[in-house]
Amino acid sequence: NIQLDYTLPLGETRKFEAGYRTVIRKSFDTQFSDTLNVMDNRYYPDYSISNDFDMTNAVHAWYVNYQDKLTQKIGYQVGVRAEQVDLNTTYVAKDPTLPIGESTTDGGQNYFRLYPTLFLTYDVNNSGDKVQLSYSRRVQRPRGWQVNPFPDVSDEMNRRQGNPNLLPEDIHSFEASFAKFYSKWNFISTAYYRRMNDVMQPFIYEVDANSVTYSRWENLTSSNVAGLELVTKVNLTNWWDATWNGNLFYNKFEGNAAFDIAEQQGTNWNMNLNTNVKFPKNWSAQVRGDYSAPRVMAQGKMKYMTGVDFAVKKEFLNKKANVSFNVRDVFNTRRFGATTVTPQINSEFEHRWMKRMFTLSFSYRFGVQDLSKKRDKNEGGAMEEDMGGGF
Image (cartoon, rainbow, N blue to C red; front, top):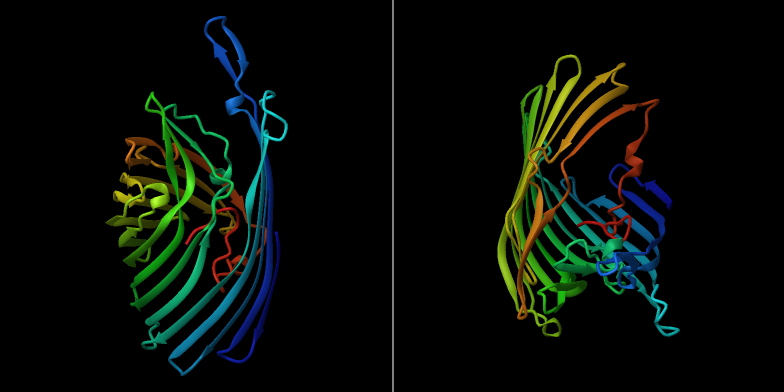
């Protein structure tokens, strides 16, 4: 990781920022598998799931950002990020019977893109209430496992593999937000529209005689999402607060004749609640619950998913040190599943998103660190850390 940021204050309201960042990741994965032959009770090489996968991903980005005020109440911020991405992959099959030149497959992406942003903000009053309009172009790059063509056979009935030529999702986002602040609670509402190109989803390309499905990550289609997100935080007392987030949106996937995909559309929603409680003698606890309703996909529908997390913490030594105990997915309910509908098959699957986890940790701060310098540079578009990212 190489990063250089420059900030130039130009007065009380004006500021110019520029910077450069490079993130380079290199990985090498290898696997060799044996399969038991029940006839002679001996293991033999299984070359169908034996391979090497070499990947190098480099993201070079330059950004500029300028902010100022048009009037005492109206401010603006404009920026752009230029990004050069180089992804190079090499897949090596270990089957010695393959002809020379057919055991190695190269893949990857090489592209240059610009990610502009524009924000307009209106200060409603002196209490901090604001109205904001914004446009931004964003990117969501595929994860490493989504570009690795090695077949995942952990589910015998659903074989999955990545695609080294998978393009990132290109997202154009328009938002209108209103923030209202009171002494003990605040409220933020955001109406948004997002155009997503090159949507990444698994595509079932084959179903064998035993009903085993074979899927591969593809850029299946484009989608249009419009919705409303509400966020509110309430300080119930000086020792207890709660934050609620709800999101209701309409999603429409366009059809794609190349993949024999029909148009899909539906209304979806999700919500989460997070509460923090402070106890005497520097004890504190946190509980978080979330629920995602069934969600339409390009080839079917995701199942609902829900879970609860819990944490308790004790601070001591003038709050320089703490011990925390965390439980992720307390009730062991957070499972991911989907129903896939294609002209060839109607299938259903479900697997654990993450197993219930218990962690006990200790931390001690030796000094004061300015974490603000580590903030993500959203000016000119979000700078994702790896093959993936969010929006």
